[in-house]
Image (cartoon, rainbow, N blue to C red; front, side):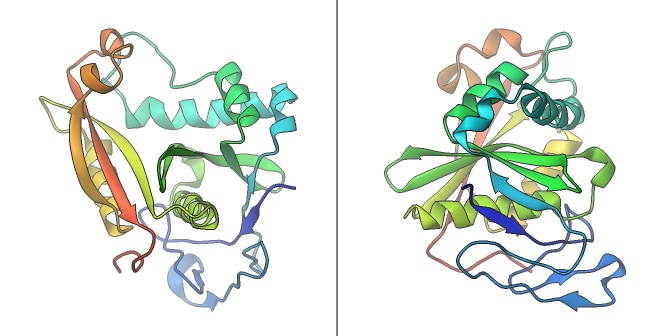
Length: 228
């Protein structure tokens, strides 16, 4: 069985879900949630986050739905950074990551509305990537819930730190990247180091339309939570 979590959030910056409760649209009321041997549960019609079982790699429709959400988000988030019409991922790549046990999805009324990749990268360190929430649900808190799912999974696996890589252009400021940098900071992540794409992922360098760096953010999972 996949690990599951369900809750709802609302507000700016991918929502305002917070430990112990969630924010209803408009912020007028709160519904408290609990963690008890698995799911986060909430009384609202909320997205459910599930770590996909490895057997789901054979589900072509699911892999296609996940890749479609990712590509829709990254078309804006990384606009102008890549040559041509390069897409962020493909159903085939997603299927491989599902087979590796690294993909979690958010579903709402049975439809895939978000995803995140969670994996082990070093001793005591996990990493998340391919974070995406359906553009039409921006502000519903799905992105924040997916990050929290990644944190809880890494804690359950005994990891002490969680990291992410943010691709940023070297010669200009990209609005989406500035937004994400501020958002991750509010979630408690801090810049660990910066490296060139050529040094860390040389196979990607020829595909770039402009020189870029990877900024690595990390969060201590043994310390306090996000900034309010």
